[in-house]
Length: 155
Image 1 (cartoon, rainbow, N blue to C red):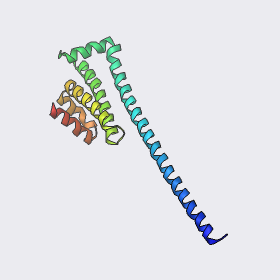
Image 2 (cartoon, helix red, strand yellow):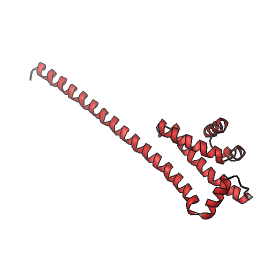
Image 3 (cartoon, rainbow, N blue to C red):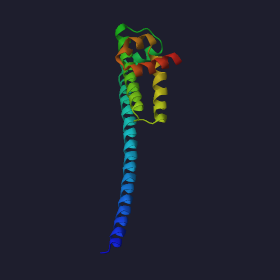
Image 4 (cartoon, rainbow, N blue to C red):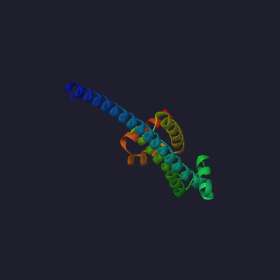
């Protein structure tokens, strides 16, 4: 086989290999995008499940419903009732922190984070006094504590 024919086949093989590499990279990008969407959907579903489970306690337990109503109406609560109500709100703070971390780590789109953040910041800051947050806030990561502090400051 003449050297010229071999060079032609080598050039064709290089072109085919280059096209195969590009096609493989396109496939990887498509797969990553699909995986990212799946992770984001999973995160959103997880947050909704946590919030739904938390809210179910108020709707399925008459005592908790009464406690929640009295707390949000500004009625006087016993120490045990106040603790129970604050713990219920702190469970919402935990959901907020999960959303915050997922967003910070790039696992939640900005528009989705903004919805969660607006909802959670407005409900938490209206249901949990700043003094109570200061007592319990030490148990959260500094970056998230700063975010919650900013929400209280914006009230």
